[in-house]
Image (cartoon, rainbow, N blue to C red; front, side, top):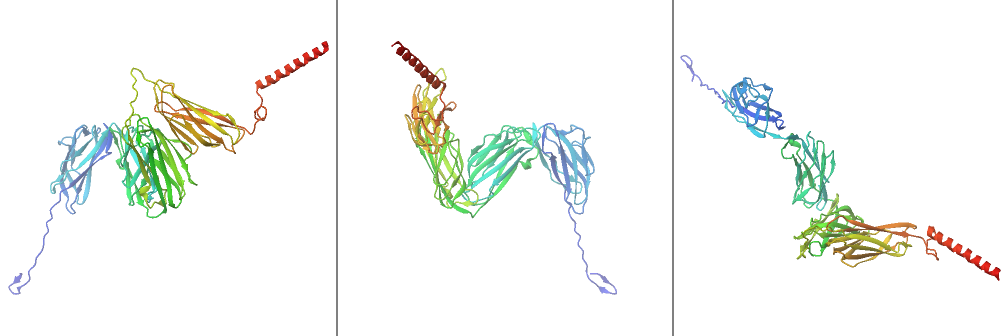
Length: 594
């Protein structure tokens, strides 16, 4: 208490003094660019921060010793806003070729930053870590690290991904389009693409196309939900587009991300555009249609080089018509030369004729209608594992399937005990079966029947395995029947497929197709029909026959009225005339002698 002799005792008083500890500096580090060609230069930046609000840091010190292969570039290029001196990491004068830098005696105002930049060069990739930054009055702070990549070339690869549609109901079709682009100055041959497709999507088909500016598509690979591809030729400015077609089975939102990576030995100067994502939301409403797929295979046990036939039925159980659904079946690699045709019912529509390769078809199926696909192929010579593949149907955008679980169906054929294949020692047999096609009669009226005969002969010294003959009959003809002296056949629309099987050396197999010229067939006209033969090895063979359609026949000669006589016909008539003249002359002479 304060007091006085004449005033007595007064009050007490207090005050508080706050003493704050000085915080140490902090440091951050970066390279720009983060990827260079071996021997090129990059800028190394050290950024020091003072976190104190009122205290100036003094005596700033930090040492950065470079990793192996990294040195100060020539000419020496340094900037310093931290004050003090910048030397090499041993404290000597900074020169080109030095393996580090050191700051001493720096000063940094409260709540501010300063930086040091230096041009470096390096021959190998690595991570560079500084020593601790410190100050006289703030003590010791942190270290900082940064990485730089070095390669034989620098590229800038970009990926851009989109989904169509972006909102899909269960059972609906979706397509992811991924554009891969090389923005760099160097070629990026061997760059790799990858995409882990979310589990909500069943992958139906993956293709690569639309390659531009000299780029060449690779062959996409699918393993479970992982899609990958190596781009064999990828010049500067080149692009390729990968398309992933699928069917959405889940009812939750998801995001699909695609990535691209440079080839081994090269670096990407801007990694931020190396991946791209496409978000997809689950649609909860749409026009209802219950599409159903069933599938069977014959035979259910196979032997190598034997024929397989799949029957796939896609039907619409309603209640609404569907236009634009997608039917997909990607066949096993063990099935050689797959061919398929489609037979619609009612007003349904699908691809016409005989088609080669995987089944991918955009269709229309009214409620209550169906499509029947017939797929034929031959089993690869070395096949010894079950052949199992799945057919799918996916709804177009705006539809929802109340039971998406029945939008796919599988069929499996198991290996039987294969017959022993012939062994040939000392030479290679070239197998080249021949097909010849004829039509009888070669001239017909609308409404008449004709018979096409296809003769398959094997003049080779070894068997021709897995022979398949297909005959797409022109639409002006109505197929009535077919026969085969060996094997089986199927008729689907205008297509007849003969699974002949093995044709031994010297053997001949005869196939026939009987058809009727439709009443409205144009006349006169020529109708050409071509048969195609495929087998296990070698190129396809074809043979054609031409049918001439006429309006009518001459009663006496059988020639069409409008058809001109040939030169031979004219000579014959001239001969008859001369004979008549000679005969008349002889009779006249004989009469005079009497």
